[in-house]
Length: 430
Image (cartoon, rainbow, N blue to C red; front, side):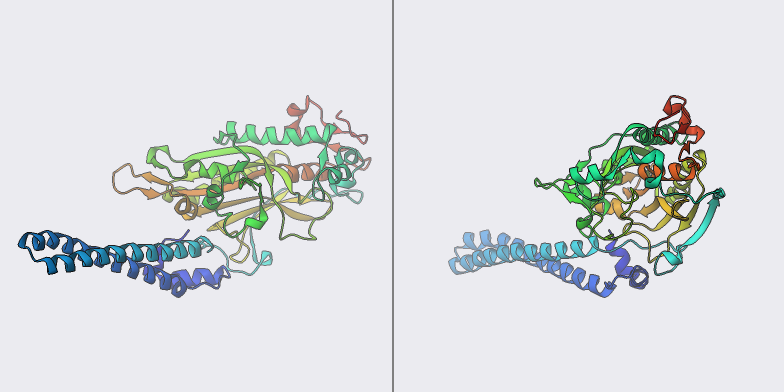
């Protein structure tokens, strides 16, 4: 959420940012509601002052025996008391209107974010590895003979519908091994704290990280009003919801492996084959809560953590900075990491690392006490995939495929597979 004082003091900065983010809302729209809210508050304060003054005079009129003045003042007290209540309600309505408007506005990009309309304007900043040259036409993951029996879309469709998958046997084990490898790497090498969180949250938590109110259709809600998390960013970030922590507590770096649920409402017709885009999937998430002065550097650190997973798995990738038109709602700057998929012959997103500044912290009212004293300040938050487990499985299978239908598995996974190194053409680990 935005700082209303910033909009009042630098409306031109706000307007330029909203234009870059393709928002039709201007500072004039925001400040009109803010002015109405402040006017109601000022009127309520004036009425309260008049009520207090009249209340003091009531006793004096009574003591003098001036019944007419006593009745006039008592009526005035009643009138002003009613006015205070009415104006307070009207101010609250304006305040709710302002909060609702601010809650629906995207974050302001950092100055170093490239301007652009869509993914075509994203800027590559890093590339690692060389896509393998195959002596045959590489297949997509779901076409591999070694995978077909262990990746069942038909049974999943019978159980749940489209965009679900049933993994079994060796494929399921590789999927599990990838998640374990990611968690071990992040906790043992990258200094993140492993966390296990609920996958059901209340509405306030979804508001806190920005999934609500604007993107409710992208998530699933239960009949009881709880929400299934689209990513454990929601739960990990909201650990500090409503808290005022010591500066020495920062930075906090969390990681969690969780089930994630997305309706994919805006992706009709996209990536319908295979398990690239599912309603239910697993992800190892990274979340950092930092001092404002450290958040930009933390983004680079988080990006390197995600890149390191791909490098350990020997998967070629590239990293791009998202342009203003392609960047997510709550981000100030985003690095997308795209892994090479030979079956598609293109790079596809496998991680998105974003710094949100104090945008989420304001929604959550998450602050820290400066070590040197002074008023509490809002923390900064970051989130990133480290990585999407299903997409990583796709990349491992496609990049390691052999002409006979088998898959050579990266050495980093061998300890998690009982020393096995190959997925045979028959779908067994050998």
